[in-house]
View (spheres, each protein chain N blue to C red):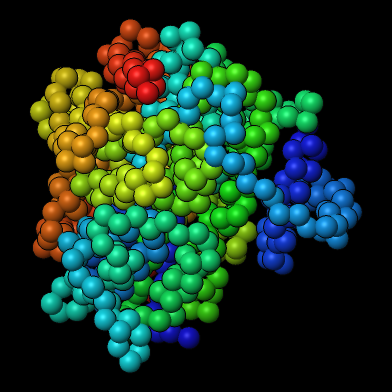
Amino acid sequence: INLFWCGQDMLRWIAKRKPYPHQKRLIQYAYSADSFQSKKHEFEKLKQGKRKEASAPTKGRLTNMKHIIPIASGKGGVGKSTTAVNIALSLAAQNLTVGLMDADVHGPSIPTVMNLKGKKAIVENQKIQPLMNFGIKCMSTGFLVDEDKAMIWRGPMVIGAIRQILTSVEWGELDYLIIDLPPGTGDASLTLAQEVEIDGVVIVSTPQDLALADVSRGVQMFNTVNVPILGVVENMSYHICENCGNHSHIFGDSGAENMAKNMNLQFLGKIPLHQNIRETTDKGQPIVVSQPKSQFTQAYNSIAMNIIKYCTNK
Amino acid sequence: MVNYQTILVLSGKGGVGKSTVSSLLALSLVKMGKKVGLLDVDLCGPSIARIFGLEQHSVMNGPNGWIPVYADDEQRLGVMSLAFLTKRDDPVVWRGPKKTSIINQFVHNIAWGDIDFLIVDTPPGTSDEHITAVEAFKDFNLDGAILVTTPQNVSIDDVQKEASFCRALDLEILGVIENMSGYVCPTCSDCSFVFGRGGGERMASESNIPYIGHLPIDPKLTASMDGTNIMKDFETDSIKPILSFIQRYSKQ
């Protein structure tokens, strides 16, 4: 565990942004007292040093990644992380080199879903090494900070973290980078949209009206910043009873499919709500790898094929 | 100082049902004869206005501040949300300082009237909106926070972070509610725990937080939230598991 280097980097972000007194208290809380004390003198030195504005990467500078596909939704809890991981694994099964980036700083789910919970990132040659599992490289703030620590960060720190993950991680050459975005239309999504050349966004939604209201806001945001939308996935489309196989539309019927039609967006497919998907996700054995022959894996595979078709036709 | 008690409804995770639980809390208190204010500080995804079918309304400025939109004719439930200040599909793509400023206005500048309770619905996470809301409410009767989670591991992880957030800011955690805990198949009556079960209860006992109860997936509730008349459709049956907590809290 080489948290020392990671800690230094964090301190640089913080020092560049001139933290307020209460933020300093929170930073002290975020790291254990021992580690902070030892770095305190360094922190003071950095604060006294010249304050250089962090330069934003210009759009499209990531030449080592052939295609960048964020998985977004205006609404929380619709299954972005689950969908992102399973799509990434479907693509990897096609012999493509895939990276998975967790841009949700406050609630990083990727470590749990990828069975890398509790693991920490190490640094070699001044670059953060991505963690690997199931044949794909991934990075998340969950690998940089202790699990139970809350990231009580305002916008600028979130932006800094995302830039760092994009540029300071040793991704290598990738065919696809799948980005798991946080919910909402906040700093993380906006920064990525403005600073990175995105091939197309995959929008995930449940059929519910309440979700669609937020999701359509998310779509409008991407339209406003001229980011193309690849298509819409309807998740938790209908519940399949394990006992009798009955399909019930708990969250409504085809709401996301209709929204895609109305907004003239490609509809990528429906994923049903089934205990198997949730159980495998929770255990860190995503369904695409643990149940490759199941109907749910077929659903994710067809979405992945649609993504490949879209990217090769561009 | 104000005369009403305030509760924040928090969750590290999105989509667990914070807005649903906030609405149910507000509706139950109203049914018990209290006057309630419901404030939505989720600026990117303001769901409360949609749940009560009030999206078309706009707010007016009175001598004591903005006048909340009332969900009923008797004016027992007042609602305030950014949805009243923006058009339905317009995204709110604001950076921190603007969010901070509007939330401060929501906290200090609303003419709630003589409400007994204020329920505050928050967005997921631990960012600008949460920090600002807690700091702004410090001078008010902030009773504490209720955490909402679903039973699955990815939710529990995020909600534990939220619990750390509360502890870091000295905010009392009133309890944890486990939402979407079980679904009864209408055909064969088999109860399927599609999101798992017991995760919230386990987390509460491990983190030494009171456990309030669990709410099942209720398609009738989902439909009434997507509809326009939740005040009429609401039955206290749908919140039986957490009713005793609400009754105890309302007597304080």
